[in-house]
Image 1 (cartoon, rainbow, N blue to C red):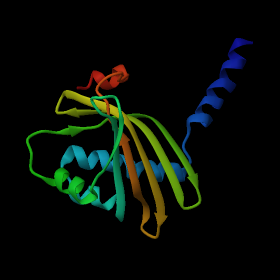
Image 2: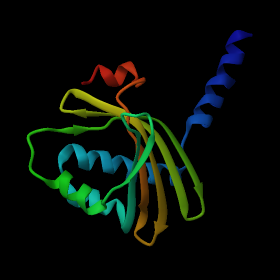
Image 3: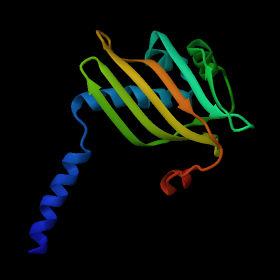
Image 4: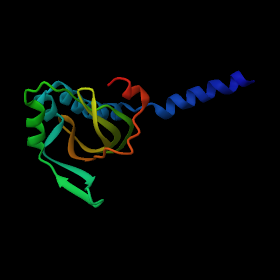
Length: 159
């Protein structure tokens, strides 16, 4: 009897966590951002974004006050493409994808490592639009903190 209950649970868990083909395409764009960062490929990075994409970082300052800082997509692309000895690694987990027609939102937890040194963690929140050329990021906001980071052991063990 117990064996009969296990099979439906396995099937149910596979369908709950399975991504639709559209969700898979959206996540491929997000994953390319991190691949571009780790390989210093500014061309790959630029291809993930719409030309007028906005970027923001949200954090708490030393006085505990919430802050928002608008970034520059071009500065991000340039920084990624600069020759450097250090490798930017930003593993992600807890991916959540929502899609409604041409709009997609992706929310992921991340940890940022410079080579093998942990620097900070947070959440990346992407908004994408479906274009004739595929999904493109038009808005990226991230949070950053150095404390209260709960990084999965399988990620920590890689760095």
